[in-house]
Image (cartoon, rainbow, N blue to C red; front, side, top):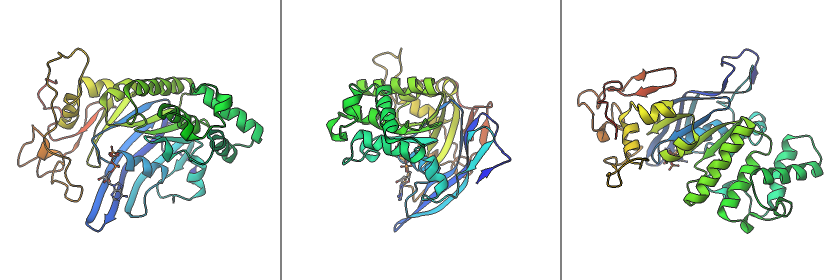
Length: 345
Ligand SMILES: Nc1ncnc2c1ncn2[C@@H]1O[C@H](COP(=O)(O)OP(=O)(O)OP(=O)(O)O)[C@@H](O)[C@H]1O
């Protein structure tokens, strides 16, 4: 399925177009991902933000072809170009297909919030890293072990020669996260998918892991999709941002666009709910009114309209908003994009 003719520009590593994922439950159909399009360029960190249930994880699971059994719709285009001119169509591949199994752990690494999702409790850290290397690389066990030790050193774990023979439970939470990063990087991926890897950590350990990821990214030139609830983390690590709400990307832009010139009321509301440097200590943070709607019962028109302080009745609650383009990088899906009052918190 590697195309000889490519549709992607050389700098494009990954491109999603109009991706849809639905699940069937007894209660009805969950439209988890609803026409999502975004891309990642080589060497770039794309931050994906949005409240719980906005479809951030299901979208990346669709890239990895790790969708659950109750998936009833799974379509759209997902193109991956590990090297310029070598385009691979990922959409439609089954989770067990050779093509995707060759990519997972090799060209695409993945880290999660909970390291034990990726690490087996019954095998040593070294065995697990070696297994991935031996699966994808033609090398001896001795070479794989040396590479595992080198990787543990690279993620700044102490005493890697001994730690390689430790089990995950012998490590602290932060150390386990580093071991999972070492495992994800074992075959030098061109794309690292990081699904809330720092959410469960204390702030100091979170900052250390973010520093580490930034250093590794600069050193290797890999691209990262970084999923988080936290806009502070996005500011720290991302080059560009995609904001998701109820299964849709509602705004994309560079970090500067999103922080200094947000065009979607949801982006503004998210930004107003996080503390910012330089803000007065008595500044009251806003919360977004209401709850994320029930995914079985998505509002008509713009799905954010019931919670939007700017919603215009008769338009926003009736018509699906267009995607408004502000620059090559910045787009927002809103009837009022470009017409909102200038002031931001
Ligand atoms: N296997 C499944 N069956 C039914 N619904 C599912 C399944 N997996 C996810 N969902 C639903 O799909 C929607 C999107 O979920 P997803 O995990 O992608 O959100 P998220 O933005 O990553 O949230 P969080 O930040 O909490 O991880 C949610 O409504 C979720 O309940």
